[in-house]
Length: 196
Image (cartoon, rainbow, N blue to C red; front, side):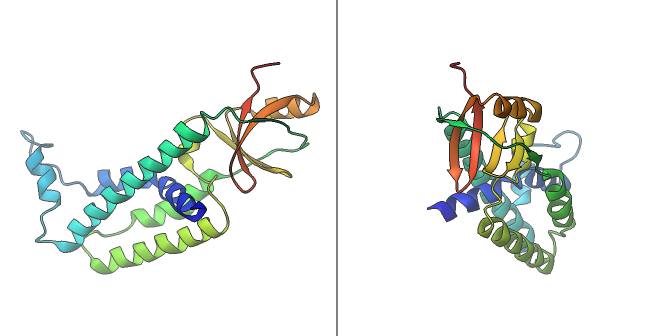
């Protein structure tokens, strides 16, 4: 079950890519009906199988990604969490921007009219996903940053939180408790304890 959850979180980390691929590859109609039901139907014209397969696959990925976002934002971030100490002296910000540049940019170069290009990009997506899942990299998700979350790594774990680095250091220095919700392994959603 945890592996499925990691795969869903992995797919949701590419949500910006999916949106960019839509903008890059959607063929709009003329000025009068640039975006209509017939224009959308044209994207799924099975006379060009690679393009139709691309759109179907992209829709499936978007639906799975939305489910992953729902799990994170509606389940994990809304949980109360257990009271816990954070005693780490140093909180290092994780580089999600490097993740975007390294993986999203090459995937944007795909040619959806070419079956070969689609297969190569699918294999790249699977290889990246294998590393992501095997190494518990679920915190590497630009969607979290877009919604105001910071990702910090410390000796005791990786924290996904809206608390700033300075505030975390202050809380640790003053031995104040925070609310910790475990996502998996040593990855936690941290919230400030309201009851002090």
